Image (spheres, helix red, strand yellow):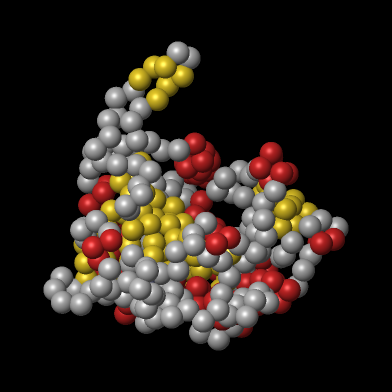
Amino acid sequence: MSEFRHNLITNEWVVVATERAKRPSDFVGSKTPKTIPEYSESCPFCPGNEQHTPPALYRYPAEGDWNIRVVPNKFAALKPTDSLERVQEGRYLKFGGFGYADVIIEAPLHNQTLGTLSEDNVLHVMKAYKARYDSLSADERVDLVTIFRNHGVRAGTSLEHPHSQIIATPLVPLRVRAQLEETQRYSANLGSCVFCDIMKEEKKDGRRLVLETDYFVAFEPYASRSPFETWILPKRHQSVFGAIHLNELKDMAHSVRTILGKMHRGLNNPDYNLILQSAPTKEEDVDYYHWYIRIIPRLTTPAGFEMGTGIYITTAYPEETADFLRKVKN
Ligand SMILES: [Zn+2]
Ligand SMILES: [Zn+2]
């Protein structure tokens, strides 16, 4: 028997197809680990090649050898110099490609990743996220700041050097807007934040829980779209990432590093996307939205049915994959 499961945040359905269901261990990659060098002469992000990127917008430490550098994306799709003026072109509408695109170079070492770096280094990456979030969201023209990380070719990157990206857009795209409408409706009907309620439910149930710290909870969502999808949420209700406190940032670094480390060791370094979903900058203090991190290992490929309907077919139960991840040593 297969089953449909409902996603409270998006109002979408997923199918857990037990006919094709696999055990969590079936997803462990079989590729022999590639030996990546600590330094690559041709890599624009390696130390010594700073002239191949635009000047840094942020660096840590401020002086001397750097641990973290944030630079504008040299091949940015959006630029702050482009115009926001709307232009009618026949039946169609367009405007200039205004926005910001940052690259966060997470470490000087070419062969590291957030799951293998020291916790202290990951904390400095999170501090860079926060500094750039604050700076970009202060621009009145920006409506949404999206932080994300693509790891591996199946996740959309061929650049090995550890890095994250931030894109600030002058509009709130439909997918985000739809989530806001759903969560707003939930809050109007039930008087509470759906994310806070989901966290309570996950802690009570426990089967999908992977990690709990003082300030964060990580679990596999009930209606996971794909095997091993994992969400990390701050326990304190906060709509935008910019509202995080320093002591929470430490727990965030610990949680992100632990989950990615477990995936790295347990699933043999899978390709994945990490997305930090935050409310729009102009809805920074609302009771219906709660920022969170989604990590989606690219173990399956969405195809025609998923593209045509938005219904994802997953081949693993989150209860089983969460249990598998819990058991991978930290
Ligand atoms: Zn490099
Ligand atoms: Zn909440």
